[in-house]
Image (cartoon, rainbow, N blue to C red; front, side, top):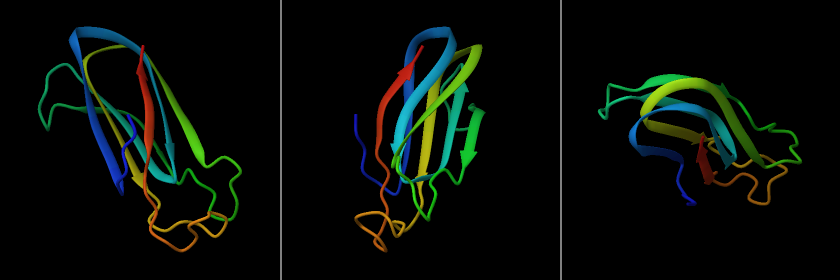
Length: 111
């Protein structure tokens, strides 16, 4: 699943409440990445379990695509939400330097 937007928010549903050990996904040109978990669906039912900011080096970054993995130590969840926000403008080293940045998320894996 590849998504093209300024930000990406995806909710993954699991058949039943289960212990989630970890979640992994890849994203590019990301300035904010978050992971949430919930045992029931609803806008206000999610609890943030991971957040990182300012992931891309604006001066140079030889690794445009970043991998995010969070060990969740067996939290119980029925739904997982991943969120990634782009950095706004492509950095000088990027082929689209100065243009609008987009976010791609790929390979969301829940264990």
